[in-house]
Length: 410
Image (tube, rainbow, N blue to C red; front, side, top):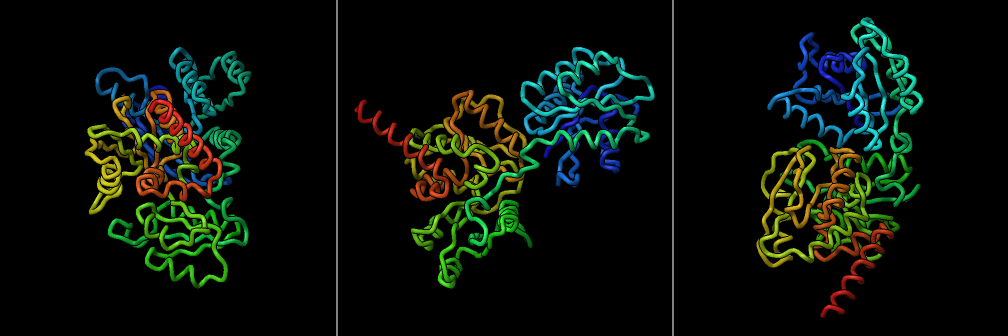
């Protein structure tokens, strides 16, 4: 869960973060504007689990540098699951109402914290109006720790339902006492001494679902399947190994990829399935944006910079123009692209991914996902969608409609 802390400069946002985490995470100063860029601090907030606090720069800055800081802060709205608006007595004006309106427009749960209570109390009329709108109000004095326990409880009381009843990654597709085989290639881009996040989270999700999990490399898959006394319920592969894994997995065993699982877990699978079909309309010279949520240093046959561009260009039969963005960067003007191909967003959160999908829908720009576009360009799209009947039906219906329209126009 991403918790964004917003407000004017010098209202005590950084002090509040330091108090709730019990660490000196952000620099605290009497001078306004000390926090220049969003400061992130992960912590375990029981019983919720892992959360990420994001302390933003004050968005009442002026000047060119201030405008850049404001833009960085506004990016945080895109990935905020729970917003904290920090104010102080005598400062609830149009500025605070503007932040409140932005949060409400995005349907983000909100907590209002009136800090620096040692300097005075807020207008009771404002407090009553906020509470009438079902917005929790907390009074704190962050430097002394006063009210911090109330703030913590307000967070726990405001946790969105999806973080209480976590959606499954693949446990619902496998079921208790059943097995999933996870195919994990270990190549030169694999992190040294560990697995990547989607693989780790998938293993944990299977364990939480009382399912069995067998982890193999792609070269050992065929032998591993032969040793089982009954077929697994699902085989999941790294998208880069799709063709080999599809060849070694019996046709009656459902197959998909980690990236496609995360298209459902982190985003909107149906929207991205439809977005994948835009591959058919790509022409030589079209611009394609490839977006990665993480910022790893690409080496060798990088999937986003080498393999996907190659497979897409081969499918289209001509050279496409590819651009790349990483992390939280995402272009303001996306209408120039004929297709956006996004990673599985394992290091992002669902709200940021859904906001990007929504922007694409509003601008009429198709968006898909690494695993989906790889499966499509390699000709195994139907098989990769078989574990998701609703997505497969959406694809087949859209394909039939497109074929009918082509026939009528032809």
